[in-house]
Length: 196
Image (cartoon, rainbow, N blue to C red; front, side):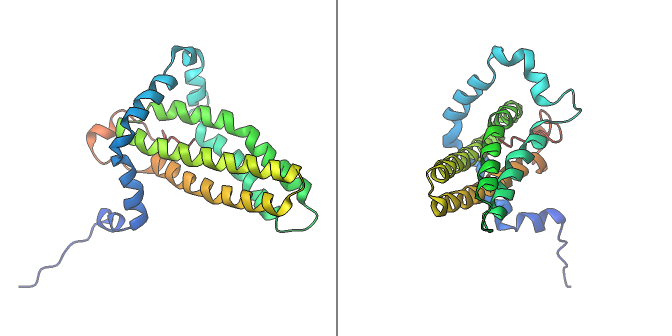
């Protein structure tokens, strides 16, 4: 008698190496001391008066995913402009605008991050580290451009965009991944991603 193995959508998703790599971030238990330290900083009472506003309660959904569009949009547009001669000033301006949008975007991301289950906060820290690295690369790019080192500035910016892409993939995974069990599903509402 021939048996037929039923393949579910979950089986197909679990076979994807990128999905497995993203899921594995939740298992980085060595990050737990840092998670606890950062959580204490993010949950300080000084943020209480504005915490709901930073979560996007007034908007009806999380604010962070909307704000993420500003730095990513600026930096993606700058990468395109860097391909054309005569667009140095415009691309530098977009990089600067993207950097100015990072603090409010990050703040809303940290507030969302504090609402995640502890194992998801590990992946959130990796996401934040990638975005911090991208911001540092863009800062170095802008400094190089201001000194007239355009080739170096472009290389740093394209590197920053690649790192921001990795950070964005992790953030998207945090925001849209289905909970793996009932315990995880409880404290987090849909769209509570920690894109920083």
